[in-house]
Image (tube, rainbow, N blue to C red; front, side, top):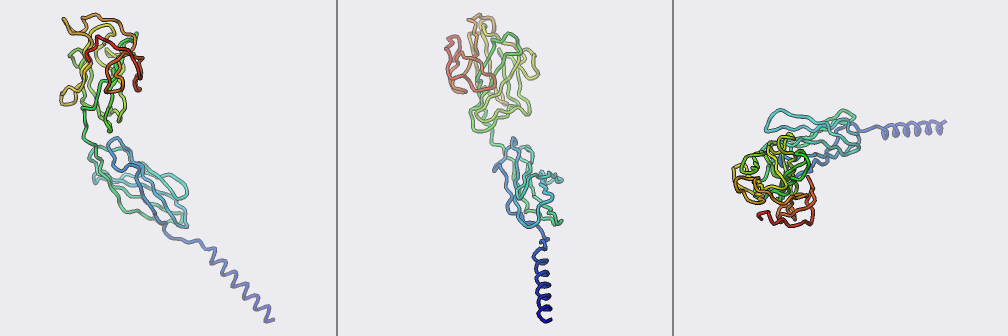
Length: 279
């Protein structure tokens, strides 16, 4: 009988131990890291925030909260699986102070919030001297197909707001908010004579004299393209008809050549000379 009682006691103790081992820990999750994918955001950069977690309870909701210049909080539901979640803070204006935290609520209902982090959006000073006229195409059959292309020679984006282009000494185009050329990128102004919403207001011909001038927002001349001479007026001098585009080869810094048009892309690597262009 003693043996049976002893065995029952052992069985009870084993069952109790198993129950203890099977209990799931209920407590807050740990936020192991919070990182941003852009170290020094500019006004063109959305910032992706990543957070990693640990703990026995899986995340139920993960929220990215951020404020702009001390204003009210904005919340973004972060997405992911397992232990890593991400959320995006949209691009903000230059000079904006952004403060943000990450909060995880796990399946047990416990909430954990990270320490507050912050960054200030800082656009580098714009160097408009790195902006160039890069390609001009006036040989299209219709004005919709004509274009002027700009090139950014710098390591940073250039905002085109306030940039102006004169065609034959008359204002023909002005850059607006939101028009930006990426570093070492191109920007095509497509259409002439009002045929497109953001085209140039004047047309230009592939067989006439023409003067295209590029100015920074303060009115300083940055670059120009001149073919032929003004004579009585620009466009009055007849010249040999050009079938391709006038392209800087290489982009931004090379001499003007006649080449196949490459609207919105880097220029051709070779072309023909045009003696009528004033280099």
